[in-house]
Amino acid sequence: MVDLVRALEELSNAFGVAGHEDQVRDILRRYIEPYVDEIRVDKLGNLICTKRREGKVKIMLAAHMDEVGLIVKAIEKEGVIRFAPIGGLDPRVLVSQRVIIHTREGKRIPGVISSIPPHIQEPQEREKAFKLEHLFIDIGATSDKEVEELGIRIGDPISFDVKFTRLHGKYVSGKAFDDRIGCAELIAIAEHLDEVDAEIYLVGTVQEEVGLRGAATAAYGIYPDYAIALDVTVGGGIPGVKITQVTARPGQGPVVTVADGGLLAHPKVLRALIEAARRLGIKYQLETFLPYGGTTDAARITLTREGVPSGVITVATRYIHAPVSVANLEDMENAVRLAIETCKELSRG
Image (cartoon, rainbow, N blue to C red; front, side, top):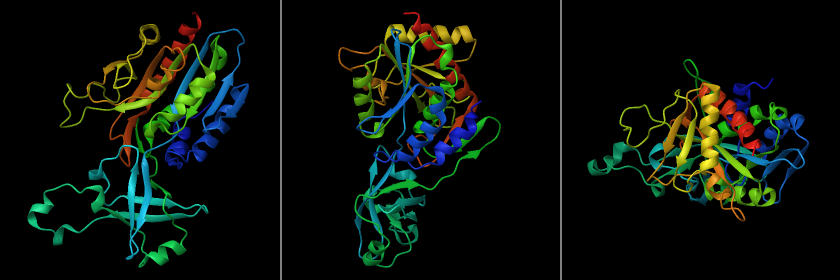
């Protein structure tokens, strides 16, 4: 039996900034391979795991393997490194974060995101949030030549140096929960594929954080009858977050998306998700993440060819698109149960 916590820990600690998903893909392959009939990697890098049921309904379950991160943009003569974001990142959460620069030769160079100390700023400047151009990475080098001798080049990816940790009760924290939570759920779902009378495609997609790119090519090749994206959503229940802004809360069950910035859930899939949750007797939450504009792989999958009826199961997660996030394990466990039960419902046609 798959240990969901252990799988999430391994996935969370892995390096997988968008465009560099190899480590995550290898972990998924190792866990899922015993439960499927075929595994392949498409030309863009998506991992496509198939449980064959010839002539049956085709259902695609997708979770993206990539994480937000940074990329080396320039090297200053003083030996510090300027960077740009890969995916949506708020500069306000970056100052003093530890990072790892991944070189082409496979080196892992540690560093710290730094800025001008507040002690020497003008009073009015201390009240302003730092912009990206004010930040740099200090690796302890004293010149640009020294940086280059370490093998660091323009375009090298940078990840956050954060390790998975158990918190109080059913809560955990770690890096890249968006969307290693969905990836861990794919692993747990794989154990139950024999229970579903459908042809199932478990897909780890690439480059979601930079435009839902992997989902587009994977769905085009598979062209499923139905699709469900497994992802995370903004988690509320903390000071300063109003219910009119964020309705989903960790610990209150998996979240079924009704609408977001890129998707109106297909009525049949939405109905199947809600009925499945009711049959299971689990807590679930409905979310309309408008007008904020966030979306998932389902937004791209649903537009494939002549269209794919699609829906989304998410886990409410605090501090997504930041170096470290917090989520509830019971929500994940019930998201797995909900996905399996929904597949059973959709397999009936």
